[in-house]
Length: 599
Image (cartoon, rainbow, N blue to C red; front, top):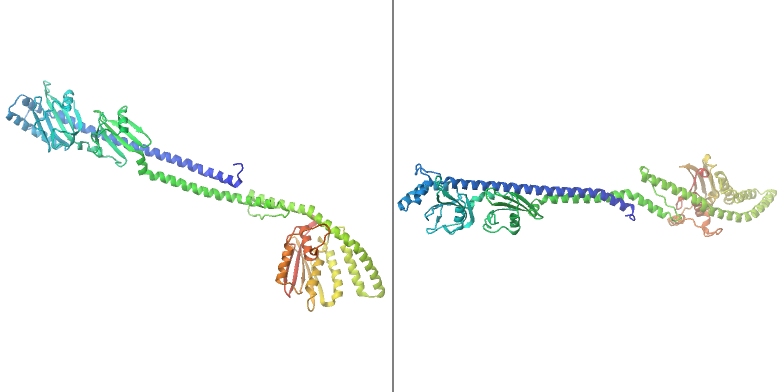
């Protein structure tokens, strides 16, 4: 992280600040939703089991009530005689007629019971002496059936009047039997406590129809099992009589108390015991299927979190790029400035934050450094070169100046005025050229130097060339580099007017504009072609160079020399500009900073 650039660091910080809360909220929401689903699933399972247990309790209470009251119930056919009374009679007689009469008396009672409970297949009474009475709804006992050796009969007798619940299955001693469950109870004389026989109800599996009220049958299974883990009933009726699945069987046998809940990664199991016996109601719910059924909310949470994460990633990238882009641009400019050619950067004046201040201060610093370097190094080279030029010119100029003085004396003696004017102007020009006390002169002195030059040229060309000046008075005291205007006027004569047919005109203008003094040298000469304009612009675009001190090239004079001196001394890249049109003339502009010495 320490070696990353600031853009990458900022991006990671923004990502962490935005993505971490999203992850925390998503995980928290996901866990809360999962917890809520589990709680609701557990609540549904518990409610379903409670309802199932209540339904079974009601069923068992009904069966218990039927088996208890049947021996005490009387019918209109028996007047004040009860079922127990009739059973005693039946026990003490072998007369077929009396047996027939007793069966007829009990038929009405049993028919009412059959009509009142549609899940009862048959009602059976077994006497200790082997006699039996049966009333069935489409079913009946085998004629030769003797129950004394059957397990259910033995268990019923051993229960001493308590209700015994048999196993679920098809009973072989019943004609047209289907899968059913039997409830039996020993009957005793209420007065003498004499054993009268066994009363049995054979009930179809519709007795457990209330267990079918499963609110989520596609994701859960509800079982009714006995204490040995045998399935007494399930919603599909396809596993009745089988053992519970291994996982449920171990949980049912390991159950502690009246109700217990088991949770694992795949299933939620709730087991509750039926209070009146050893049955257990088991609800097994597949948690995986719950999430499949209701997983759209989980997917929605994940989709929303992913969408927010992508949006924040894009925002983080955009913001990091927006914040660091100006800094990156500034670093690129700073790298470019390792070379001697300084590159400045444009600042947004409307931006007043730290970045704006950084840009402004950097631009100011670069200008100060540029100025310092130009003044301390490049101007030293220029000064040395200028001094060499001056020394070279001084040797020849003193000789030429003395010679001109002699010619001027002879011209005055001989009274030749043109020679007097030319020699005086040329002498002043030499005196101005060899002046070495400072590179800077007043603009008025530079204009006077041009006047001397034009005095000589007008004697040569006569009235072919006219010369005009349009100068603002207050700029004449401006300090500027010397020998800037005369080379440009010379170019205007030799390249613009000398080859022109007819008369020509040169005009020098001087005026102030935005802390600059602008000089314009205009001529109405032959001008330049488009190719010449392009060639000259390319020449001016090249940076000034020094091959060695004192060495001279053709580019050291004229417009190129003026441009180089202005660029090096003042640091102006567009110090010289020009416009030219073929056969219409040329205008050259130079710029000189106002009050340069005060900076």
